[in-house]
Figure 1 (cartoon, rainbow, N blue to C red):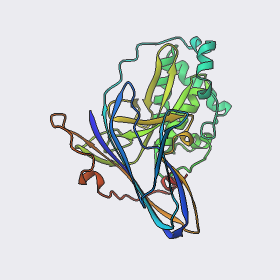
Figure 2 (figure 1 turned 180 degrees about the horizontal axis):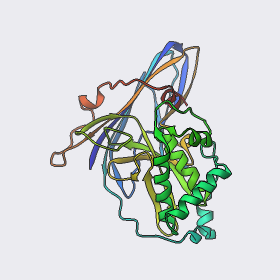
Figure 3 (figure 1 turned 135 degrees about the vertical axis):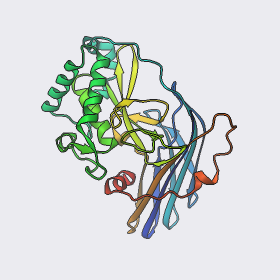
Length: 316
């Protein structure tokens, strides 16, 4: 499936700021499931862009605005071709998770982090879910994905950045980042390496994954990937309780959200920013040759009310 994506973020400060330094992680990765066709970034006020690949394999576009400014607008546009992943045939026994080479290779994705610090009660629940869904690793992972999708209610604004995952589980509500963090924490608690994924979802309803038409206006999305001994990474979307497919576009992965925030920056000055951010995704007709990314529909301003949680995510 061919998708054209426009990620737009606009800051309006109530007083001019002297300088801002920013890192953007919005470029889709090329891997076995998707191929990046084109990508470009524009910034206003204009700024020199330094691009590099970070430790986790994600493209980072760094730019600084050194002149006084009362606003900042960033537009990242991408074209990507996606496909469904091949069927996951490996179904190793849970005992395979103890293989020393496997553990050493995935050590970074087995430890608790700020957003995935589980407790004994969570670990026990994960063991119960895994045991109920079969004796192999894939069944355990898919069972945990179902558990998270059924345990949390999708409720924007219900959680705050940095809120312990144990409290989010007790609260029973959150957004896609919380679903992903909870799934990662539960997997790691029983010895399954898992990583947080940032990306885009071509869906008119983030909670159900449904699509209506060829153009959607959404926010960035999150899911998780779990390592299967001898079988690579299994990607699942707990928010929608489904396997990651052609409607998912991956930006990058890390231990948790802090490793792959879409936009992070600092600024100098007394100004307080008001944030407007959105994602527009268009599904292209495969029978037509794609035109330039710089079409009016992709550059149009897409405004949507922002929750306090979303504002905090973009400011970090």
